[in-house]
Length: 288
Image 1 (cartoon, rainbow, N blue to C red):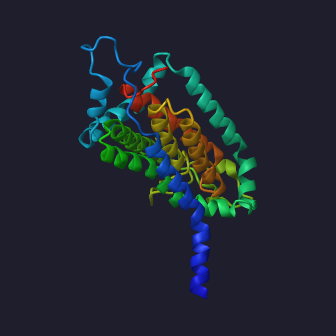
Image 2 (image 1 turned 135 degrees about the vertical axis):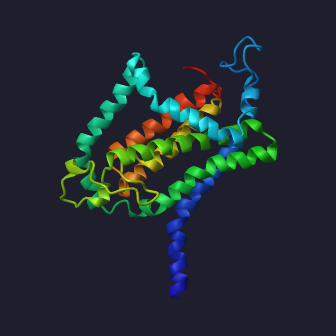
Image 3 (image 1 turned 60 degrees about the vertical axis):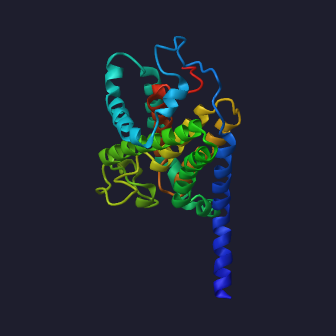
């Protein structure tokens, strides 16, 4: 009886999470298709640069490491772009919203510490389940691409993996630099203004601090790659970013991150994916 009850309880807790993962798994192959025959970002002169198909064929497992190194160089030399007067408006926008959310952290975070309204949600959207849910779409897309001999789907999956690695490296550096305490590390009546530079050294995969959210940055990086590579699927951005948003929200309700951590993770995941990884010419819709 005890064993049976335990199994039923486990199924009730894990059922919603596995359902979410199953939807993610099915959605990725459904979205996969060959790219349009003509792409706006393919130059008019065919001899000036390789075609879109050639660029996709150039994405291989062996090219991932060199691509990531190039991406990291571009990420950490971004201040040079600011020094040249570029990208100031979006940068100030992101920093301004983040600063506003940081100021609100002492007011919104205690609510999630006190409430029990999200217990079932937190069990379904646990950190482990959200990590799995983020990995499934690119893996499913890659397997689907292999089965269908679809190089475009395989390239999309590899680009998503590249973006996740880029983002997680960046998140790890920022976590180590800011060493922000997580909400769960602060007492309900504690001083939230003293959360910065208080966490210990890197002791686990969770990193050395809370800022930014690693789960959120990975979820938005995958969502951005898939949504931007399949622009003709108009429902896909809502689905992909909606699920990524649920990942971010779950990090707040689980007391793993502040809302400001989640927002910065989302902003970085989108920015690195679209303007670093995809800017090399792997976008289908070049409306930049």
